[in-house]
Image 1 (cartoon, rainbow, N blue to C red):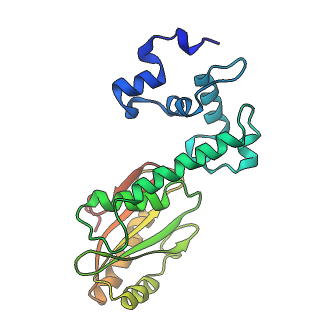
Image 2 (cartoon, rainbow, N blue to C red):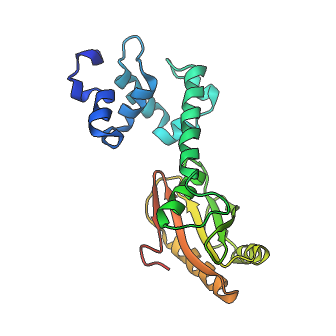
Image 3 (cartoon, rainbow, N blue to C red):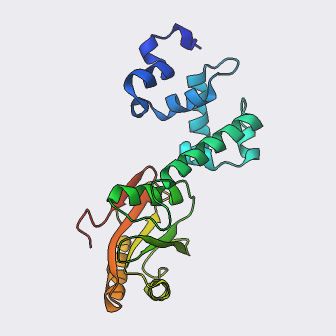
Length: 225
């Protein structure tokens, strides 16, 4: 084990973040900053790497319950609480950009909003943002759960909610727990079915957003609408 204090300053995670920004750090380096110290026989970077290998990445680490988290040597209840607080703050930060009743002014606002809702979910969730004619958010509703495909998403349910809310437009969204950042054939089929159903009631489908880990894919931007 090599002590971090013996590393060149530009390679130490905290100094690297200050000089190059957080985007320059690996997952293990970011986690090392959170952990602050290692354990006997392992410096903090080695501990962070072992944790990511053990849990299978950040997403599964964040999703671990207290018993699973604290079963790993060197992790206790205090670290669990701190990690969950960090995760919740990051999700609330993303959600602050758009709230119910706000008008949507640019695509990045919507991407941040749906990401805050769906990132880290272990199962697939299909949700709809219902908007008025000024693109203000009337409601965000999670309507379908489980494996998302053309047979499990029912356009008639979306039509019923759009009529009940007197929506003028909608944005649909779902997550890819696998982290695959591309639309599947099923995703495109669902989009077309929903667009056809919305056209019948004069409600516009503005986009279908896919949340894949820390990326959000827009089918409108890809020309799939």
